[in-house]
Image (cartoon, rainbow, N blue to C red):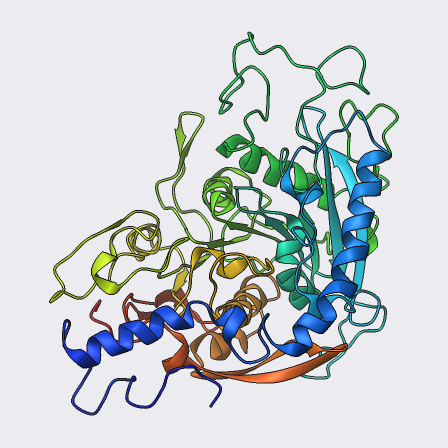
Length: 488
């Protein structure tokens, strides 16, 4: 067993320990320690193997980003990604992925307001086989857009998921929204396309906070419009190129360089009437809020995945969005800070104290979006990994807490969810309902090793995980409390 729960910390035959009891406090203390497992756990960032590989992965990526900025002096990216080595790098163990396990192609395009956005397209190698089943991966593939979180979330922090999906037969676009990562900070709305310009005194466009579109970067508009523009770019072809507003002399891609690998055929088996484009939109944090809204208004989205948190009543630009397409929510126990159970009232971001003899409200995470999807009768699933934090879904070296296996568990569920709704694989139901999985994770020196994930050890014992979706045969499968924590 690779879990971090020690002996006696799982529920006993007599049931879970009572809140406030010594056993309950011991279990809670262990859970808080496990929330730092990405650093302290087996083969974590503090392991000798990881420390040895980190410099070789960090320096080339950092120097490349500095050179890229120097070559584009009128396209300034004013963010930590160009200052702190390793910020926009991802896991050092994944540095050898490109070219060995899949394709990674850098791309650049301008958003609707002329700001230069940078990112990557990820896809299977030619003639690739599924690393889990050995089956061939016939072209073309469904498409996936991943939108980062805010507070300077960078696209390579999400390379782990892009790589996992590419290996299973998807074309994935990761990108930095305006004002984050390696993307430009300012728009280009003036007569000279090469120079940043906006009129701060003008009336803000719909959803914008100022007359200077995309400024400040910490606003929902950057993530909503970024998701929509990125989807347009991912689906672009030589016959239907991307417009690239105000690109000027900047080097941009006129269309997706891997367009031939994208499945542009209408999906005749879509479970949502009118949604026939094989596209999934995925977002984290403010990106999750954005995709929770975009899923209702962009007819190209066929399914949505939200990392901390899915929102069923998302409002943007004066319009409230309702659940429209199948949604997978993966949400966390903790926010940026790891706190004891009696501080888990309110939300994970703004905890409120509760009586020490009270357990956290098990329905806390379901209330943000999952309950709304269930009420609307739209297929949905909620997973809350044990000891998970808001940083679970990003690869950042030595910065802020994250559990050891939350990312692994998240990838397993995302792969199965997309297989169900984009590939219509009937075996996906079994994966979504399974109680254990084998997950391939990088273990150093270009190796990927299997890790056993057991659902009872990996799901939160504080907050409910659940599902309500239709099987491949059409039957409604429903369980609002997989881990039996008191939500049914």
